[in-house]
Length: 631
Image (cartoon, rainbow, N blue to C red; front, side, top):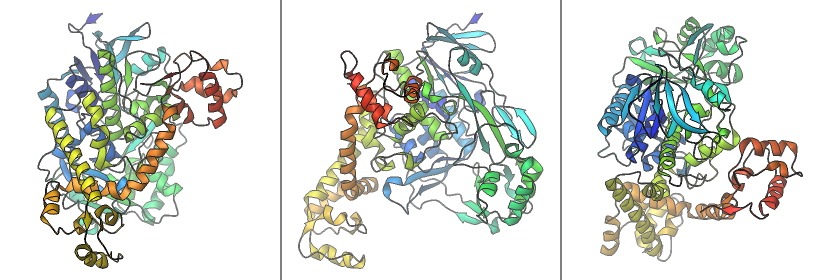
């Protein structure tokens, strides 16, 4: 057996979004890190849609950014169009999204990795060297071994990947790229259980074959905000995306040829994402809808290759083409490549701790689609946590654990490890019960303290964010401490349809009115003018206004969090024997043994666990030598 000459502290397997975040943050923390990719040229590839961010996903990108991650920064440098979604709803669910240049994003990622001095090795990992339940190294296909103390697996859709286009099946990890074999079997031999999932991607079509006049152009925000706090002078392009609509003819062709779809052909296929259905599912399961929107998005600047968002499919190629040609504006459409479905192995995430380390193998971390998720942002979020905690493992430091009220990233990991998944997991704002506090605009306020504790950001960025947070706090205090006169505000209140005031009132009280904004606060003296001038940055004013408008709701949520904190901090010993609790039902006992919750708070959130089960558990935990408190 050959060995590499150099021993690494950490090996990250896979160069996608999860792998990049994990490797870069560990490298930044001084860990000798190696990133292993089957193809160096594919590192940083955005293999599906040409966008970063979106509903709930934009919040995660901002959180990753504060934790030292890089996805938002790469996206800002390659943005073709930037837009905040959900603006018709409350501010807590406003979500930034950037249409990106996929080719540029990939080049920026690879250049940045090189500049940072992170070592990248082209090779295929096929198994792990594990002794006494501890990682000792990684074996490559060429027979060599890379010795290390920890491994982060970020294998995407490559583990025994199988592409479906109608009746055609192709062994591949992505279209035109070979799949990875060996890792699944290696992990199985260590006692880890895997399943199969499916995801899909739509066709790519030629720009020149589309009649764009028949589509509806959609542009970004006039004054867009960057995804990364490190981005300066953000003034991206504003290339339009165009929406087209399917019709009854489109649907009839699809329905008449459902059997040509791999998913409807009778094959035994894995489960796909419920919230990103194929065009077959849309037409068949939602037949009450006369049409469905297709968003045609450029894959890079002035691209001839167009992504048909909304038309994910595994139909035969000729049926895909025939049905698309019924759409007004796409009568002469030509393919660059057809859409396809892909099946791949994943490992049940309940086998992981909330640090993303395996419960069975010390030093083994997993992130991204290998944990059953779908989406760049979900992968990036897991990658940053896995990378931080792998470095903590190597440095013998306390790990970073994010709770559900800390971040969407905390919600994501908590859901995965406690509820498992039988379909690709995708984040939504509705999954976060504390979403009023988890806004995209306050990611810095929520996570900067943790970033400082683990030295995840450079000093300049820490200083910049600290100043922003301090100015926001001062702005809120200013609005709470100062009055506004009737003559200054009443005219504007009347214009807004709001009741005028008869005597001076606190600015904050006026601002709590739904229609009133900070811009309505007319400055009537030098003292007030000076105070506002110091905090005139748009993002600070916006966040201060949001804090005041949401203060009542936020305070109530904080009270709820305080009530459950005692259970969140109550640790269940790792070797706690649930078989000792005879009064538990067999079903509940099996769930506890299977998932091995780390705290009582986690135990409460396991699907099917009843309040009576928790009461029984608490009785046993309160016995001597059973309970200890988290620091």
